[in-house]
Structure formats: structure tokens, C-alpha cells
Length: 170
Image (cartoon, rainbow, N blue to C red):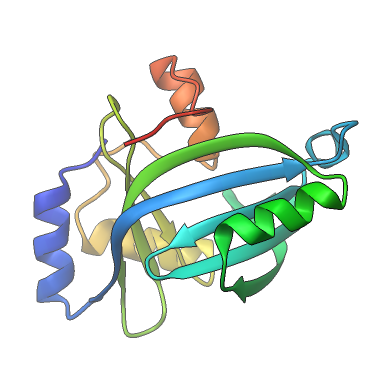
């Protein structure tokens, strides 16, 4: 839970670029047997601003209290056609949801991803090179009063708010 207006003001003062301000449509795919979920891997298609990306995340782990993973990502041009293609290859839609994302990027490439889901307070993910940089930014942007976690958005919604993100739509 963050004060979005205050954070956006600080980001703008710091010269951060607004890179995304839109509703994201996201589909997580899996095999019929749930192989990706069982291995704690992710295969995702999503709209991201004016882009559409297909992403595979593997080797998820915690380093210095931050979640990291190996990622392979490609941009594609047609969300619905890629869904159809993946389904013909035998993948199934495991999760579909929508969220509003406002993303700012600092000069060093650090991303501030402000996410909003229907009926849930606003929360923030900071993507930086390492945990030390995140700690610096938490202090710089006066975010230390907020709860931090390496949990996924899905885990936060379920555990903290009792909300299942599956099917959430704006």
C-alpha cells in the first residue's frame, strides 16, 4: 500500500520517465500437467503499454531478500493470435487477469512499477540491479514506512487481502 500521488511527484522531481500508464492484460500459461507451476517457473503473455511481450522466467530464487530469476522475453504483435498459437501447441491458460500499471524509469534503468488491482490498495515493485540499490531508493524516496516482501503480486493479493487475482478485470 503506497501513496501513489506522493511517489509520482517525487519520481517526477527526480527526473524519472513515465514509460507505462495503462491496463495490462496478462495470461499465464502452463502445461496440462502444471509443469511450470510445479517447477516454480512462469510462461506469460501480456500487454504492456503499447507492447505485447511473451516471457519465460526460470530459476527463481531469493538473493539478499529480493526475488531474482533468469528471463527470456520477446515482443510480439498480436495478443489474441499468440494465445491461439500457444493453445494449439498444447499450452493451457492457467491464469488471466488485468491490472493498471504506472511505470517510471530512473536514468540508471531502475523501474518503479506502481500496480493497481480492482478493490485492492495500490502497491509498488522496484526493479533494480541489486538489493543494495533498492535499499538506497527506499530511503531516498521515503518508502521505509511501507511493508516490503519478495512475494509475487498474486501472493500479496491472496495472503494480505484474500483476493484471488484470477479473472480480475477493470
